[in-house]
Length: 177
Image (cartoon, rainbow, N blue to C red; front, side, top):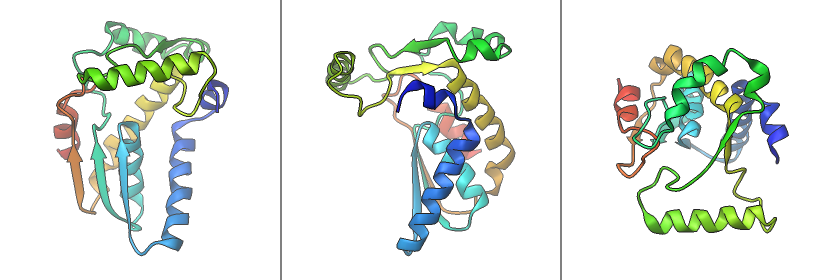
């Protein structure tokens, strides 16, 4: 979908979407193990904290807010912008190399995909931009994680790429704690 649909959702909507998926999967599968990348990991933690249907959890490059070396310096302005809801829906930043990756080959693949998206050849990989509103919802989701992560009792595997330049591996240590 487009950015209008994204901006019309909240973290609770994202969580409800994974709850619905879990309910479908539990009717079709004997066991469900949730795997979440970045913000998907946040949603997985909340899902596992509230449902015994989640039998295992895998967190990949978990996005708990500790920035990596390539996080834009403008991030320090977010707390100010968060106070202005009308701005949150208009301000965004576009994905640019190195896309949080050290691997040059992956960077080139992503650049080709973004260029194809700009030419209208594909939209299957998303928007390649991050709205401040999404970051605000992410912040609210993080706050919820801090309240409920201790309720996760299923086996959990935490993996964080050392090649990730947007999020620090310290996020893995933080969620483990």
